[in-house]
Length: 168
Image (cartoon, rainbow, N blue to C red; front, side, top):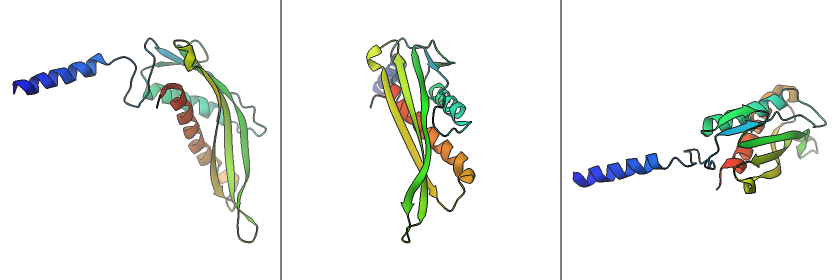
């Protein structure tokens, strides 16, 4: 009984003592970082989806807000800072059927991201991320665009989040 109590106290102490920079989502936040700023991603793609910029920025802010203890700010001034731009938004043929007709199309979204860590500048990076979704060529693009964009934006945000604060 006494041993169980000691083990429980040690376990409780370890949980409360480890407030450094880890969250249960796997995020590794540098000690001392309290805020992250996310600037709006302007859309410089040749084809522009008018909702993409805001959707990407909002989802990235939401991801940092819900999965880290950081206070999220818009624009600039955070201990950590994410900015970038949308550089590509393309739909192309992805697969042909046996009679050489397009059977699948592919929507690809590409972003360029700059991450600044004002606590640990060695963690800074500038990188391009790209994700795509295929859809049947028989479907009208406008009927599937919203759901495709939603899935792609989620994956892009996960890529940025993982690169910025998950050190696997």
